[in-house]
Amino acid sequence: MKDHEQERLIPDEDFEFEKEQFEQEQRRAEEAIQAAETRKRRAAEEQRAYQKKLAQEKIELMKLKQGVIEQSEARTLNEDIAEEAAAEKMSFGKRIANFWYHRKLLLLFGAFTLFVMIYLIHSVVTQEDPDLTVIITVDNGLSLRMDELENFFEQYAVDSNGDGEVVVSVYNIPMNPDGSYSLYDTNSTKLASMIMEGSTILYITDPLTESQLVDYMDDVTADFPESKMLTQKGLSLNCALLREKLNWAEMPDDMYLGLRYVSSTLSTTGEKMQISYDKAMKVFEQVLADVDASATDEEAQAGKTAMYATTEESTDTADSET
Image 1: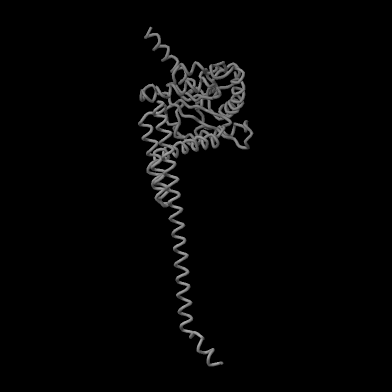
Image 2 (image 1 turned 180 degrees about the horizontal axis):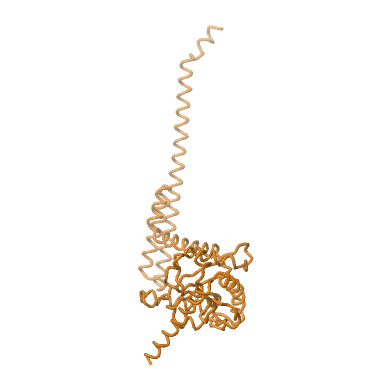
């Protein structure tokens, strides 16, 4: 009985071989089933795309018959459908490249628009709100000392906007009629805009400043009769204090700090300008006191002489033109 059973048993080598053959056939059968399902799925997708194209063409044909769209538009729609169908068969990388090829102009325009918006928003958010603004119209080298001039006025200004710091902005708008005509014309427009805006009250001028601007300066000599440095054009800055603060030993003796008088304009009311004037006047009074204390009688006389010489020259010129 034992010998008979041994005759019916399959050798181990044959059993492993048969098992391996069975597993290979099973895998091939599964792969064939998967391949058939993939082909079936692709065929279904192609059929849906084809049906979609047919439906779209049918709609376009009906619209063409009814005169709703032009034939050129229909061709464009067909091209879009064909591109969409082709894109569905592309790899991810090719889809990105195809999208960039057809939409790059739109993307570049959108990126440029976004950059401009970000820049404008950043400019508005980071823009300083100065506590005091001073305009200089002289063209004699003072513009090279803007930082020193801002620091000089910051010791007199106060934190009027409540942001925790004192900020003074100095704008350089040189009004030299002997310089470049185009620059002079541009600065004239800019200066007129600042004057009409009305929030800037303090101006530093010199004899070359046009009389139209000087006419806007307020004569406050009656308010400070004891001042030796105050003239009808403004406060003469010809003193040791300014030469030291600006680090300018050869500073000209014909610069004046003036106040723009209060008036209503197209951009503001007299009431609003009065607020700015009162704030600037407090700074002006302190500067006047320190300049008077620092200046010698000779410096005071030199400043007034420059002012009167310019006034007489302007009068003579006007008389000759008349």
